[in-house]
Amino acid sequence: MAVSGFEGFEKRLELHFSGDDRKNVGSSFGLGLRLLDFETLQHVLHAVQCTVVSAVANHYFDAYVLSESSLFVYPTKIIIKTCGTTQLLKSVPPLLRHASLDLGLTLVFCRYTRGNFIFPNAQPFPYTNFQNEVVYLEESLPDSLCYRKANVMPSKTPSHAWHVFSASTENTTCPFGEDDSDGGLFTLEICMTELDRDLARNFFLRPGTEYDGDSAGKEMTALTGISGINPRALICDFAFDPCGYSMNGIYGNRHSTIHVTPEDGYSYASFECVGSVYDDRDDVVRVLKKVVQIFRPATMSVSTTCASHEVWMRVAGALEPLGLKCRSCSVDEFPASGNVVYQTFVDRRSKKNNNNTPVQNCHKVVDANAHIGLEKN
Ligand SMILES: C[S@+](CC[C@H](N)C(=O)[O-])C[C@H]1O[C@@H](n2cnc3c(N)ncnc32)[C@H](O)[C@@H]1O
Image: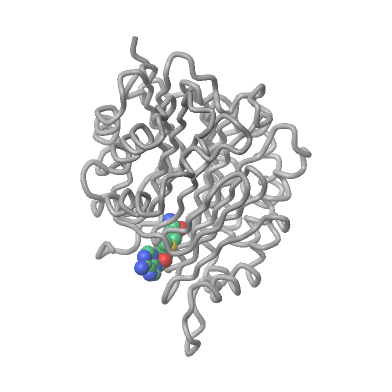
């Protein structure tokens, strides 16, 4: 742990694979990457410097709560999200090697995202500088991922910016496309800072109680209302000692995940979920409302990755009636990712945010100078 405090902001890596072996990945019974044994995953996580603390699975995928956030393993997709001073990108070479040698799978798409670290100086190389992270990633990826782009999406809140790197092969279709077989999926990645102090206390263990991460996690899930975000989801949760909380929710072929660093001075929570553009339009609104009620952050950033534009508009529509005003919104397109829309919201009631700064309405703000890497070939 950093001397200054725990770094809540996660690094997130998403890798998609394809393969000819129908036995492994093609059929509805195919397990693909889920066939990687637990020892292999532990070996990969060892390189990242984290461990598995809890796990759950359904017909579609496996979800692991880690000592530093989460890992999701789908038949052709892996998502790893890690916080603190972990070395997330060190997972890339062993994952590519095991996917290829053990399962005959090849990488077709890679996406790496993160927010702004609260303690950037505590990060090890290459996470001290996004440009270095991009170079490190580019060197780890096969040449077949020839469409590559990196951008730091700006916000009017200087402590929040969204770092995105995406790479794909020539023939990869957008996994977030409207015509994709999963039904127009989108991903919401939410980062919240300066949580309401009283609400953050819910993520501390009660003094004097015997500590058990699983049962304390369950208690926090119920007490805070997290269990009500999607009551149909199977939840795997864990409470840390003396504070901190992580959960993965699994529902059909969709995951959700929450991580909380409740310590005053650097409090942080993240929420991520997958939805479909064909869901009830109000689903996103209901989910966002619950997330805001659970944490009441002073600042909230929402990154929406989706082929179409309607979801991010619903985000603003959901948050503004809750007292969060949209300060900035930037839009960019990435290879095989579709549109990434990055919006930041601030709580009107927070003294810090109540400084009469003119509010910028959500519209397209693309900072051309922010591009630090461009498509090649
Ligand atoms: C792993 S959790 C959630 C991480 C997530 N990225 C976040 O900050 O929202 C981090 C919280 O658990 C606490 N914690 C306690 N013991 C920990 C441990 N062994 N490893 C990681 N975090 C621990 C940290 O101080 C912090 O409050």
